[in-house]
Length: 387
Image (tube, one colour):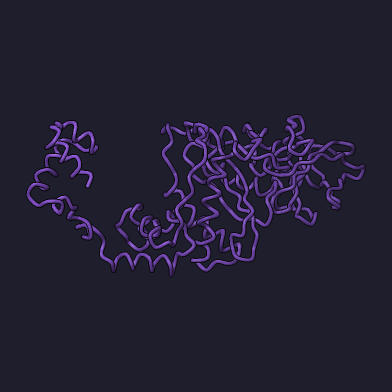
């Protein structure tokens, strides 16, 4: 009807092709084509012949039904992105992500995402791998009926996850375990970005500033290793790791359920051998620089376990014993000193509960978790000095 009005104005008022095309909001060539069809066939000639016809490249109805059935029967609670990965990698699908998304939206299996909020600039990534690592823990019902903590250590440069495992509760030992796994495999790194958890930092007031003069056991260990420990003052500051945990909380519980896993030992094995390699392949990006900043751990005179441990100081009693955690530890006789009375020594407590007593850099003795002397683990020269 609008075209008929403009066509009448052209014939009666002498409008030019340019003026008529401008009134209709179309190109001049389109106007000429419509005019020719209108003059030959009337108003019916302006109808779009594509209406009511399926596109030549549209998917068969059977294929659409097959995809929707697959989602509903196997991956009902999956996000579109997660389902698309399974559709492509496991079931060999060839349709695009947008096609999958549109079909799920049309079937109302997944609601369209809400409009994003105000645009914020992300902190630039570190240019080299090993310059900055993130470590954080997430408490979640990873397996139905169990609330575990997932401890993750990843690289800021490319989001590669180096270490991930489940524990009952996040703390000093879990943080040490993640750092040890990274150093043994890749080497020393430059800095570590964490929250202000009590095992990372001492904060005199809740939510207040970090007291750098009173390092925790973890902070002391990082100082010994030369790793700069950086504390974040808000969840937004840890946006990279927070977003990563959002993805993990969305995908990992569903993957564990598909694999039939319901205990922590099996879940940790699944994480290490299957999930994390696949997750890194999917979400890891390329770092800006090819060369990394990791430095190999080559200090043969210092055991990594003697740094990533709980260290405390004790004064030796007259009978060459010390008391630690309600255990009486007897220092064996050696060739270095006749007696260690009133000498200040360092006690190392390790992840397995075993203990070690050090005088300076020298290990005087090692003990089982129950406090019994572990003579076979003492250096050979020290054992020779025992009479």
